[in-house]
Image 1: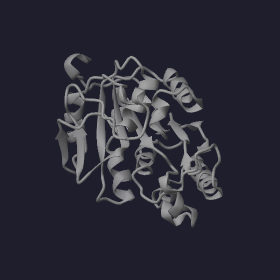
Image 2: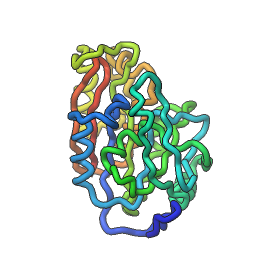
Image 3: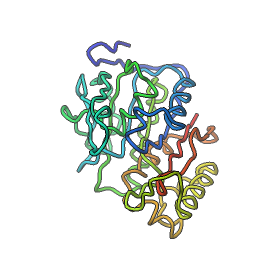
Image 4: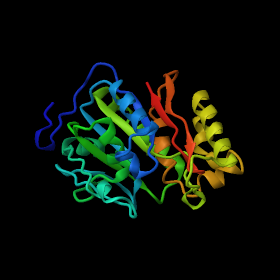
Length: 268
C-alpha cells in the first residue's frame, strides 16, 4: 500500500478490522483532556494498524450519497461560539481517492458522487485527532442521504462489509441520544435520556438490529432522545457491519449535559 499523495491500494489482508461507533459530543473533546478523549485514545491503541479510515459523520448530510475523493481534505470548523484555540486546530490527514473510487464501486446499489471540496467535519476530525494524533492514516468520509429512512442506511452500510478485510477502519460518529434543545450545562442526565440509552445498550448487546433500525417504536423516550436522526444514523452504519456472534463492547457509556449520550461501541 502507498499513502503518498492520498493514494491507497485496496488489497486482501489477513483478518478483519474492528468497527467503531463513537459518541463524539462537544467539539471541545478535540482539545480537552477528559474521560471521553482518554477513552478514544485507549481504544485506538488497541486496534490493528489501519490502511485507511472511512468515517460516517452526523455532520455531513446531503441529497444523495457522496464520498470525499480529494487528496488533501481540509479541516472544517463547522461550529460557533467556542474558544479560538479550537478554530486553530487542524487535522492534516491525507485523503484516499483510490479508496473513495473503490467505495463507489462496492456501493453499486446507489449512485455515490465523488466530492472534491468538502473536507473533514468535526464529527470526524475531533475524534481522529485524539485517536490518531499523527494524522498518518488516510481518511475518507461518506455522507448521509437526508432523504432516506433508517432502513436505507442500514442496508447501504452492509455493502461496506468487505472493506473490513481490506484493512479499512470504519467509524460511525454521532450520538445515540442527542437533543440540543434540552441541554443542561452540567453532568446531569434527564431520566428519558438514561432510559433510552439503557434500552439501546440492551438491544445492541442482544443483537436486535431490527429494533434499533426502527428506534422510534422503542417508546416515548425515543422522540426526545432522537428529535432528528442525523446523530443516530451513524450507529446503524456500524451495527450493519457486525457479523453473527461477533464480540461487541462499549468503551464509553456516560449520558452528559442532560441530553447527550457519549456511549461508544466497538465491534470485533
